[in-house]
Every structure is written in C-alpha cells, then in structure tokens.
Image 1 (cartoon, one colour):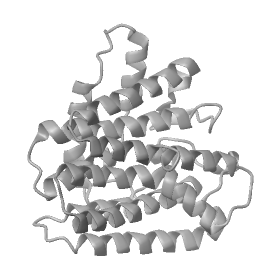
Image 2 (cartoon, one colour):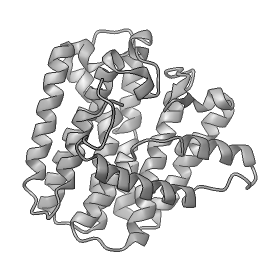
Image 3 (cartoon, one colour):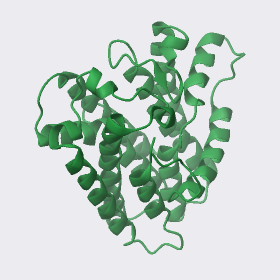
Length: 295
C-alpha cells in the first residue's frame, strides 16, 4: 500500500486545515480539569485522537471560496461538524453496534474507559456541536445539521446498516445506507459553509451535488479499505465488516466494480468542482484526496 506523503493530492491543503481545526477544537472542548473530569477527558480523548478533519475543512472551504470572511461565524460551525462525526464514531464502536476495539490506532472509547462514559461523551459532543453551530446565528444552518444527522440522514442510515447485517442487499439498499450513514453529513458540511456564505441557489445546488458525490465515494472507499487496507495505516482492524456481517458496497457489486465506481464518482465530483470560477480549486484537491486515501 502507498504511504501517505506530500505527493498525495490535496494533502498539503488538508494538513494546513487540519492544524487549524485541531487548534480550534482544543479551544472549544471543555478542559480535562473541569468537573466531571472523566467525561471531559473522554470527550477530548476521542476528538483529539487524530484524523484529517475533512468535514470541517469542507465547511471552511465552501465558506471562504464564496466570500465568507468572518471566522467567528464559520470556525465554531466547522468544529461542530467534527464533533458530530466523532460522536457518531464513538457510538458506532460500542458493543451494541460494531463492537470495535481500535480507532485511529488507539483503543476505542468504551475500551479506554467504559460503555457509560462512551455513551455520555458521545451525547455531550452532540450537545456541544449544536451549541457551536448556533453561534453562527443561522437557524438555517442549525436545521441543516439536524436534518443531516436525523432519521432521514445519518441516524437513519446507521439504523439501516445495523438492520442489514447478515443479509444480502441490493444496490439500491446499499446506496441508501451509504448516502445516509456517511454521505448526508459530508453533504451538510459543504452546504452549511455555503449557507453561511450566503451563496445563491444555483451555486448551493451544484455544491450539494458535489457533496453527494464525494460522500458516497468516501464510504465506498471505506468499504474497499476494510477488505484490502493496511491495518497500521488504517488505525483499525481490517476485515471488521466481514466479521460483523455488514452490508458493504464490494460485497454487493464485487471489489473490482467497487473500485471502478468509486473512481468514476470522484471524477464526477471533480467535473462539478471545475464549474466554479475559483482562483484555487480546493474542492478538486479534496475530491482527489478522498479517491486516493489509504485510511
């Protein structure tokens, strides 16, 4: 497997954004010394465990690309999206869900602490996320996030994913799972950045389609990596989908077709990104990085 290096498409931009977001997350999260200490330690343990911060980067990129210039509006909202993502991972790893023991190369939260701490830390991150996005002053942004993670978004996709375990699923069914469980939040990240930048409806529509493409491709590639990825690079056990009898894209269409479809969808996202008259097309860089990524 190829090792991550500066030759990876978009990596330099994502690394710059990652550092910025990590500093912001450290600022917005409660300090470990604040009571109840273990709860706050657990929150910080999971959020600051690593990651490329693609979701907040998408929001920041959309906001700034289309004229947004108030960091006090976008920074809390962008960090809220990473908190939502982390909360979903904490709950996804629980024994009642995927029962995973490793995440980003570290013990999962319920292993590091206990199940109660993991559940409550996830809940607390969910709560803090909405507090942060509300700081934008945009009810539309708050509603966008709520819709993206509710029963018609991430949670609905997660439920469908659990319900499909051990079953043969159709292409339509796996598409629904991936578009909702993973794609809905990624799409919302771009839309929230664009909404806060007050883009017109035409631009928002094109950004939405771009978000749907990269969100779907992201999860297909996740499925592929679970089959043929490198555990050290992934930071989690390979083959957990098979162990848990999960419905996956390669399991539905085959590994070769999954690779072909992911590459095609990434190119479709790149084509959309080139419709925007931007000095720097960071949307293309992000899409290509998602197509390249090894973890």
